[in-house]
Image 1 (cartoon, rainbow, N blue to C red):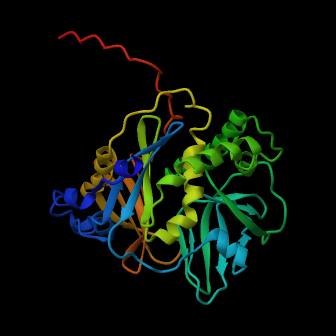
Image 2: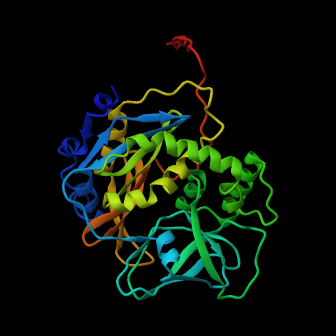
Image 3: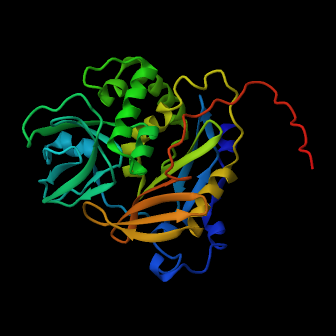
Length: 352
């Protein structure tokens, strides 16, 4: 039964045929670019739901970028990525000492150590034998100790989606601190330094996130490179990577980030009804968006897009998308609102 349910996948390429024929020249001159090329090769699979979180896997058709990018966690574990504090909250210095490995950091990844723990603000690609200044947010308000060149030595967590939203919206540092403290109150986690890692690593949160991971393990096919995500009854974002290998390296972190905001809010609530077309149509909005070149701290380039109900950016390398993130808009959304259980009343008609 399950195989029949997941056998049908909707392609974005068909929708792409209806995309506008051109964009303004200052917006990268036309809809044919690395992002739209990727969209045309993505298949949207049937949704899977668990405790308020709905996931639509994205499968890549044809060959992708087969470059073997190294994640933050693996680079730190293998010892060739060094991260130093700069003495300012807004930046750290990262040095890739490898001669062969390209290191990819996902926006929202938390790095532990230094004078205080930080969260990476943007996707960053660090070329071999390169030093880069990386923009960050602080996620540990109550600590500022050590020298200006104190090292960071861990990167186990990705900020929850509500926290990442604030970073993507360019929120002031104070709002990021407020979000971290709010999550500590929600889960009743005490931290003398008001540290996000204390919440993400707490026994209560880790156990809940493990349940989400276990449930969604069934949907990961060999060529899945990302997913569209809904929290409650609203699609909140999508992520797609250049190849299944990179996606699988970051899959658990990414899923945890979205699931975090649903923990404890939907256990006794009826699941929303989503169709594959809902996710496909959300992704297809990108075809109509306006594209713009924007800076990136490291190697490669960044292509931002906005309009028609979607906003986001893609980190590009070797004339291909390395990572794409899309959202209905970088506005600060309230926490997911549980749907009422049971039957719904028929609303009264409006007076004319």
